[in-house]
Amino acid sequence: MPEVSEQLPRAILWDLDGTLLDSHDHWSATWSEMADRRGVTWTEAHGMALVGMDLLDAGHYIRDQLGFQDSAAELVKEMVTGVEQLLWTSVPWQPGARELLAEVRAACVPSALVTMSYRSLVEPVLAQLPSDTFDVVVTGDEVSHGKPHPAPYLAAAAALGVDPRDCVAIEDSKTGVASATAAGCAVVVVAAGRLVEAAERRVVVAGLEALGLDAIRELVSTVPVVGDGTRVRGDAPLYSLDGR
Image 1 (cartoon, rainbow, N blue to C red):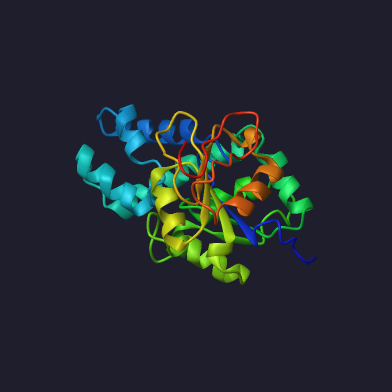
Image 2 (cartoon, one colour):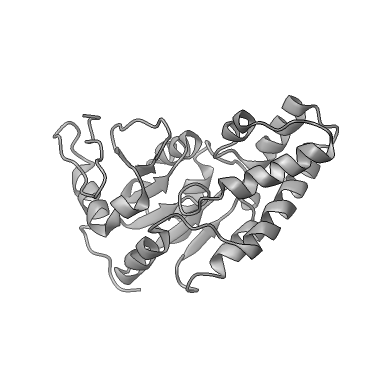
């Protein structure tokens, strides 16, 4: 692989659901069907509570909150089957996602997909991308601890042979941000409509279309300096590194 520019991160680590994919409707439809089959009402509040959560933890949440008699593992299997079927029918890309992935690959920056979705859910997504889009794929069924534990991001950085402190993670949820931050990554938060604040080594962008490789390059050049007021470029306003 060609040498990476010093102005770019050693690697970019990508979340999937909510970041690269607008998959909320797929998950919501599956959860609603699961509830309907049991005569229980599923609400949007239930769905929002599961954003970014490890799937087994989600299974426990559904069982406990809605009184399902199934085990958490059985509920996860049902969830995965439902969403997988929908993904093979339609992959709901976020605007600008595939373009940004292609731009990063063209710049020879290593990439890892770091998702709590299981491997079978990732396959329909990878099928729509060039085979070399991701150098490493870390899925929720392949790690001992899910987000917000740092294990998924640490595993991705280790597989790439880079220090996580030299990586930029792109996330959308508080759970995912906590995981990437605990691993030592700088974080770009794609937080349209979500309350995720800017902080040290963290910036917030309204969407991937407002990001671009130039903005990532500027993030890498400014994250060591906190409170300098520097803003990441983009079509949508971003927060400075000190939150201003």
